[in-house]
Length: 315
Ligand code: UDP
Ligand code: MG
Image 1: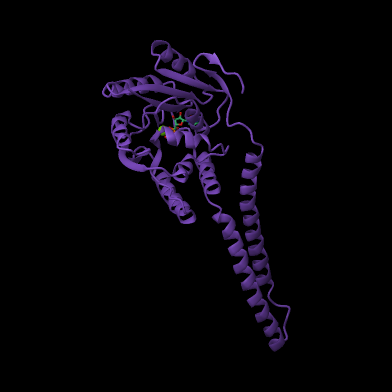
Image 2 (image 1 turned 180 degrees about the vertical axis):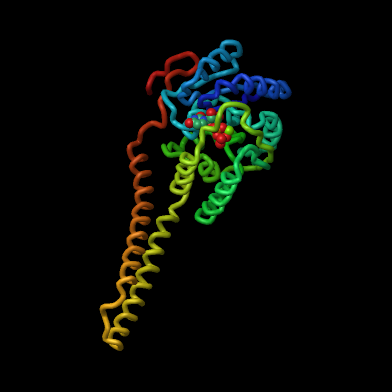
């Protein structure tokens, strides 16, 4: 019998957790002759009674485990806690809101048995999302892909099965500002894709707004590629060369016409344009500097309040 950990980060998901538990139980019953499972909830500092529900589920079913994080650290960190606490020979990470259908797990297990170490599920359609979200997301991945050498897969989210080797590899990547999609493709290993129809969220609300999505997008760029830094140097070169050519032109024009005073609009435009480019470049450097600042502090990714009814000592 092999053990499969199903890791679910949850932030204010009390409405959906019981449904999720039932669905997973049903699905795993179909493969119970070959696999045991551990349902590992990561409570990401929920302010509702999610953690009570996890405790109740654990009281009636010892296959349920939970990690109660000390505060809301965000989904990326909650998933990292999942990697740390997973006991299985393989693990599946999925969202709590049942947008990731558990019915796909047996298919993932089949591919894992064939030797694939990272089986990721790709959304076919995105239900219940606005066209603006779909459009911006599509454009963003195109841009990210242009800037980076490692492929990033647009519609492959965090619904995936990872072999023990992948889990151990991911545990070594302790960066605090995390972008898991980038980490998965960066680490390599044998990958295979399966498709699924994303369902709309079962209940509750999405935790992402455009602000936090923009942040995640920046995170993706700055943690995944240093191309923006190069863009500002390239821009600097182009502008300097243009400025040099323009200087020669002015020099000659002044010699020929003798009029050196006119051109206030040009002057203003050039100063503003350059000022803008300089500020953008400083901003880009700042983004990377901020990341360095955060990593250099070397803080642990998270603290744990409780693991399976026991208070965790701080190691
Ligand atoms: N989540 C989390 N911490 C957060 C925000 C979200 O653990 O700070 C979890 C959430 O409970 C859910 C998953 O991340 O299981 C995906 O969140 P959501 O469904 O809100 O995102 P969406 O599907 O809209 O991208
Ligand atoms: Mg969701």
